[in-house]
Length: 118
Image (cartoon, rainbow, N blue to C red; front, side):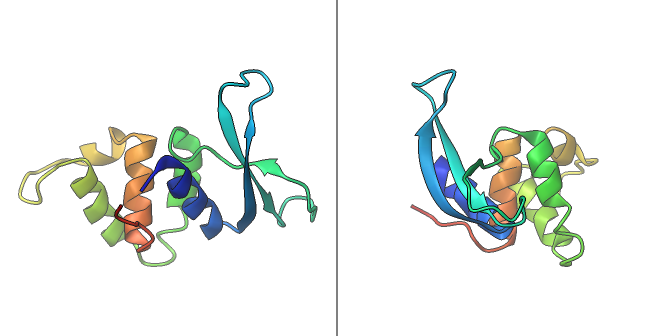
């Protein structure tokens, strides 16, 4: 699953719609993803979508929604898998504190069965 598809899939879970890619004002050679989120100011304007694959804070916020859904056990399994930690190995939680935002994003999408193999 490519980076943009991953970012959009996570954003959709949190109510983002109508995506577009625009150049960054400061670095025009870098593209950023914008979308509409009606929970922001009840506006139809476009806002920058959180960079879930590079921002640990954004992924931490995303991870918070897994526990109420009862998905935290599945997330742990997928995070171990994405971080290549065998089930039989005692990991002492290191897959959580060493996992990158990108690894967390993949585990998140796999947990919610939104991951698409290409």
